Length: 483
Image 1 (tube, rainbow, N blue to C red):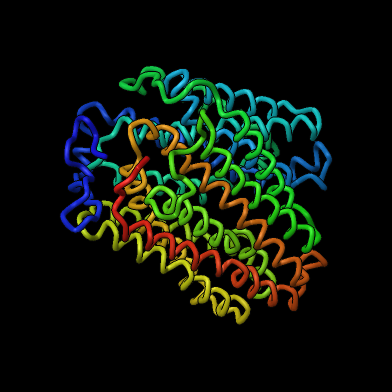
Image 2: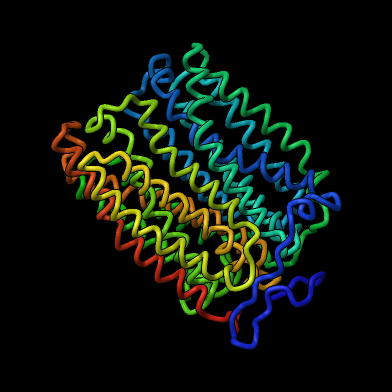
């Protein structure tokens, strides 16, 4: 459906396919007062991405001061649970109280979470702070997606999403580095004071910059039932990610995924919806788009999580150099996204398909190259994995948003963040179970590292193929029935 202010954008063509809007340059994107909004959105994405990654390098320092080494993984799992629940509810909340007010509130929640972690006297308060940070950051990210959908013309969406991908890539590299610098200086708490200050500035600016959108009658109330069931499913997946027993981990992941399917069924019949109409219907652009995003994100998680320890063990790389090797994925994502940001016409769908097919190809390369310690091919595989998302993600997001009705635009756009984060949690759990079955949990030896180097990628290959199939389905069908 085209925007009211831009008739004809993204309407079906004579061949039944959805036509992409004409490309526009960066100068046009930042004109007409859009620069401050664009900067605020990028700051929000940075807060969400960097805060989710910063604990990777400070947890040893946190453990030394607060204790609770056995709860390291909960710092990430708790953040992820909060972020997914918040991201899923962001669209509805923006409709209830208005985008500017909701975004300001999200910033304040993040400030509270950061202060809790910064001032934590024990590990329990620290972990509670991480959960609150996840809620705030998830809302910030979700509201950023809503702002993109509501406040930017269709012709700018590919470039906006390319910039968002670039911010994620930078955060992937700088988030752990910032944490490491503070930890090395003996002040890990300073990380959270820094993020609290940024979140406070974000919160103060949001009501003034995110104008032009008002409360809408997208449906009364809050979908509490769906959010509660979603919380159970996400919690099961999060626990699966930190469970050492492979069978238990796989079982919890399967239960979590089954509960997520149940959420779709409940939401389809609910009076107050959490997701757009037909979100679970693979015959629509919306349903196939969410499925592709979930499956492809899940398939990509093993490289970031298990690549560093495997390379350290098999190739003898230092933690720093192993991190840089894995960083090839983020760098390629950013470069690829910016390179294709101006594409339009038939290349809209082609880049989605090229990117989707590149994910399973990259997994095959990594499953072959990692055990044999072929570093050049590891870098090729990692870079191809990142480029796959750089080529496709902005066009997938734009196509999905264009298929949403005006009624569903807020909840549908914010759901993109929740779907991505849920896929990341599921992929981490599945890769973790595969690694544990390979002997990873019993201790990192050369033999267990070689075995895990195959199975963390082989285990998610079916997901990658399913995601590619959904991406082709998304780009091969006209959205003739959005309701």
